[in-house]
Image (cartoon, rainbow, N blue to C red; front, side):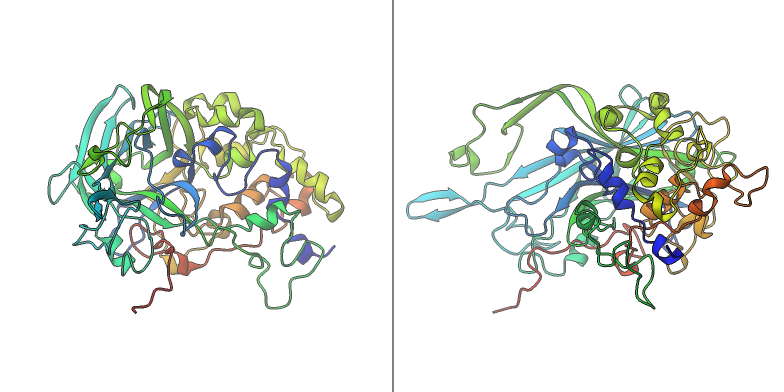
Length: 516
């Protein structure tokens, strides 16, 4: 088989072979989380801000609630009032969070009503007229959030409110989802008014926060993946001349939105000092341990529902201690590394406990599955154990790039905040293995093709040399380790913004509105 054909070996095949795995960074990646999509973390990004004029800042983006259909009304996609969403920072390499940013949400219903005959009847919609940044009188349901910084243990440490640097308020409004052009004209400009400057306790410089619906920035042919690799140009067919061997597939996530929790923080307020510029980070979501259904949820037709009402008496009542149910640092770990029996346990664990999952990294199943599927095409799983090259990628950071001193192995997304920024137009989507050291796995930017990078790392691209010498770790897999594994989908630069919050305006539910 020619080298061009070999380049078309698809990550999706491997993912389809890993029972229970869903190949969309972390969309529906574990059995339990499929039942609670509002707390399903889909992707986590952390990178040195590349917006002009924002040198010295770090952007963190945690995406939740996958596969949002833009037409998914009438309730659309509010986050969970009973959940705790967190972004944690480990700035000592210990595997334990030193700083945690906590998001809590509150949904408020105005109880807008109309007069029908002689009765006042609450409406069934979240808006009954156009909504704008300056006029929300027609908005029936809204969601706000608080942001808290915890120093030390995230449950017992010193918790301090983060406030609006302009108004001093500790409450931030979240924009409505992109219902459509008649409900919200010029949605991009509308959403931009919900980017807030923030005062961070102990930080001399203000940061930024934005929480709202965005286009899903992840890219992959998910449909073809699970239909026995049913792509436009299958493994047995050459890509036509002039077509990129890494861009022949269909991005199945292109038509969906997610909800982003985005922060931009001065790097010096995240690190433990100028001598240690490397940080690790991850996002989690937690629910209350006790959860019961309310036998008498507040009636939509009751007189009490007319007028301003919040929703602590809804259909679900929750209490007790927080229980973590979602976790995401490095992409694709719970999909392609962690075995099915441990997926829910991984989501409930912290990086400091990752020794229990070490065998999945040092003795990975993915390369073995790929060899079983494509051995006749020259795919050979590296016969090198333990896979210390994968320990560096997933657990410790790469020495000389983003590995902290005295690091404790723990699965976190790691970033060297002192790395020079690559402007958006010059970014290489293969990150470090493409020669761009400001990209994945040194942090993760929206542009980075983590599917192709992870596939190549799993198949041994970091195991060098390839020369059959005494130092060659596995001559039998030399050719296979250098193949250009790809899922056939590359990022479209137009799908990202050049400035905070970097992920693009969400797709509208009704984009074809014209004025009568």
